[in-house]
Length: 435
Image (tube, helix red, strand yellow):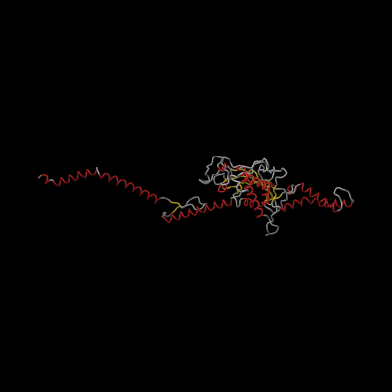
């Protein structure tokens, strides 16, 4: 006991030391683990903060002309973030407004209401009637263009015969009969003097009456524009189905775009008879003298399998091997390719090209000048183009139709790609009559 008393302090210190050693292996070990975990978390937070502080930040793209985003030179506090969001929201709103405007400009109407996408039998018949009415002798496009044809040889011959009848009647003679020799000579002299004026006068009358020449599909001849001559309302003919209606309606829309652009060009840029005078909208003064041909209408597809959502879920596809623009049909728009042959005022070619592409989604891809038109040869064929040099040229063009509005009109087989978009105006040659 005496020993215990003398060594009490040493014993207490020893016990404490033993307890301390034991504590390392029991609850305190968990405390070390927790402390290490929290330290690791704080180090991760610190690393993240260092990255945020040192990271390079960029301004949002708010202009379609920008390709590289500018560097943000301040820390993105809440005010900066709000300003960036406001800018991007504004861009998104403007983009949506631009899309709506584009659709508004691009939108066309059906020849007959509810003819697409799922017409009933009565509507199919009504569409066929309207289509025949609008395409016979190009009635629809003659109205748009104020177009006409040069006088034919038969028309000239009839006018000459009518003149002869009038002159011989004036002298009391029968055109093919006898009579007073003096009267016969006088009638013949009058007739010969006037007859040579008939053809040029008729040609000039047509050139002053119309704004452009356009050959019509009459008497078995091939006209200037394609149309579907297989559409018929005659007994025993089935009405056109949705795919045929779509192709024919598509052809009408494209020809509308072409003829409206030509009409607008001639109305705006025809020459005047006097300085500072108004345009004289006839063939003699028009920039575009003749629409000779529209052909090669065909939809343009990518030669490889295309993403069905390209143009909406991703960028619009570009295929440089297809055309200078590289545009092909996609989920945003369809591409229709065609060729146009025109006789034009040589000095106004730049104006013509600009106007054809104005106010619509029509693009001129290539221009080829084929020949300078000889006015004497043109006159011998009945055409009077005026006193300025004219040329014959061919244009390769494409027209875009936005799916935002065509999608609601497409037959399911075309929309799904089961049937590719048919050639607009496909059918019998345009020289055949539909009925």
